[in-house]
Length: 340
Image 1 (spheres, rainbow, N blue to C red):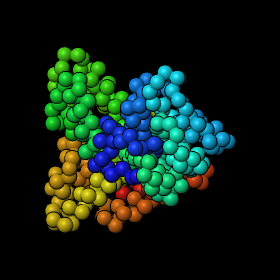
Image 2: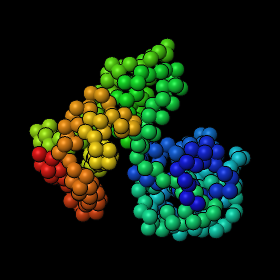
Image 3: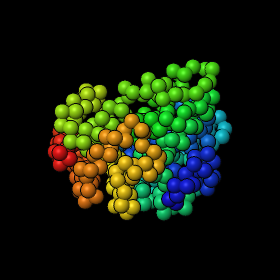
């Protein structure tokens, strides 16, 4: 069964007992890991419990496909349901998962986490079609999800935030759930235990030097045609061991926002600044001037072409064997020159 986006949080909070297998996959590794842990804890509170939690590897599954069924069917020595966690799964796990789904022995749960599986993936197809399996796709957080997470984590810590602070955090925290949580935890620690309101200055002090902000500089320099800034930003990103794929996606996210603004400009026959003001969630006010200037350089056709180039570059990073850092740098430079 394929989980609809609106139903995912319900499954994360309370999974239907009919499901024997849950497949969680997608680009956002942090979110995949978080959902896997949340569902696993519905079965076993301590995920490191050696008696109730089994963690076979892909190598073991490939050499012995029946192992997954054996583990989920085994009786718990300490009572309760057993949890089987298979991490980093590939299509090679399909046979083992099929065996586990075809046999209803035991009442354990198999939680499988994987990377970005294509729609043609045999493992993904199996989980989406079988009535006793649940497939959950995890894509990078959009601005709305980030804003909701910001408010939730601050509320749990007894904190509120000004509107400017929320806008700043949404603009600079990036799209990886794990990174976002780490940065927000840092902000909560910075604010202390007495509660209070997070100001723009507080937000800037905590995430101003974050990896997400570093990558946003790469994106801004790319779409702005600033070759000098782009070169220095890429160098800092690579020195900090940032993923080339993450860089491409940050640039892609910025161009998608620009595409939306350009669409508003053409549909409503308004200027760049008016279109930017209509974007939701709002653009951080300190960034409006730069984005407005850049929109004048990019037509819808040009943005569409740039998005295709980025998609091809990501595919090349994953499939050609060429250094991903080189592919990403060349792609950003190509787009920056086009912007000039």
